[in-house]
Length: 145
Image (cartoon, rainbow, N blue to C red; front, side, top):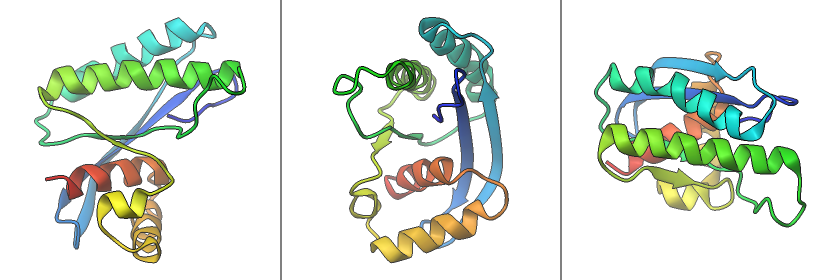
């Protein structure tokens, strides 16, 4: 989830292969036109659902903001949290199993790589026009297989 002004976007990357040799096979971006946080979450869930239902995925991961929105009382942070929750629900329902959640801090430990190795891998896979947060979440899911 990326706050995009008043309209958050969801970036997704689908990987195949192994953690030592991952390949991006598909990526997409979803946007919402709504300015109301609850409607943004519903819009993204509605847009994501058919994309998940149309393919069989073994695992899914989401890179969350990593900070609690309550501390700053920021509308953008609350909006992102609502959207993350909606996306988690859609993924969980479609997969029928838990979704891997990864935070930026400690991501390398979660994936099982050194930070420099993970950064290099994310950069290599992101260089093809794929959003780095989407790649990080997909790598976490791939590592969890």
